[in-house]
Image (cartoon, rainbow, N blue to C red):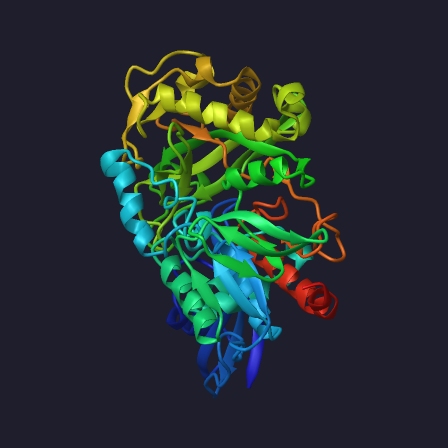
Length: 521
């Protein structure tokens, strides 16, 4: 017999399958042979902290079904080709969906494969050198490959989140992501999953080309029929453009080519790093921290200051702050966590909402004003970091008080920190709102506003300030047929899951329109 039960347990009772079975057998459910956790969340609103579970209970029998649903991918080696530009989550999942639809993906990626990227990323900390084609932003897996692998999304209305999670499990992710309220693969585990997806594409007859940067679209009769690349190769077919929010050269190329673009909002701020022990003690209401059975604590804050949102973004418990620039004379930071979330630090982006009307020099730069603002702020941060990847930083309470920090706390940021008056050189509309936001967060979470926390500049790559407009029904560009803008870079996603869902939707649209497309091709 299989039952589904809702349980509310103490952390030690929910720690393992064996402890859950013991609880059930002791509380009226006899002969339990196995349990499978379907949903798991932590309720830390008050003491004692409780764990809410939905479980399948197997009574007098063992599970016979698989923990996740698998998809059979056929052979598309002789099928018509679709060009997918960018091997981040949008491009990878678009490629898999194309195979399901009987089309052959040709996936091109400007950066290196996910394992070769590791060497270039290591050089950033050791030599303060950025490879403009292989870094935390560019390469197989996209920006998410080495920046945490968090899978939480609010985009459930856009598509089937569970489908994406099941595909990740099929390619090597832990099945815990199917149950956790805030699922997370970890930057140490995600590269292997990405590699398995790439191998799946190739085994099914698709193609994957690394170090192959798109330089231009090939058009015929106002329709995109392929791409040219920097290495001289040409690829033919309708194009899914999934280049990510840091591929500024793509925006410039599209703008210079007269392709319609739109300005959109984004958020800008800093990385805020606390000791994880402090966050544990605040969130779990326990001066001793999380104890043996609870995970590294998370937080989420949001408020309004002077008509704009101020909020935490991409919170990384037990994580690290990393250098995320994609070119010279830039300094950008991001956060990541390994699967065990075991570092001594917790960090999150603390950012301020910006709308297109907030961008400076709109009269000069027009649609590109948001990108220009990002570039100028990243260059200013680079200068304040001593023209290296050494990041300018300030203690949190010092920033709020408008005073310099004479010293800095230890940090996970391996290129190093330099004390800098962020309150002085950050744009006023950013710094003033951050200051008020921090005061509010300190009131609702006692101990959060502290000089034990360090602000590290700057966080500018939360999302794209550009949208590549498309027909909502057809998913193709509003004026260029055969071009399917996709994912974060096109302005339609905000994380691994939403980007993957958007990639699938573009692939499905191409499959539905194939008879029409092939006549023009």
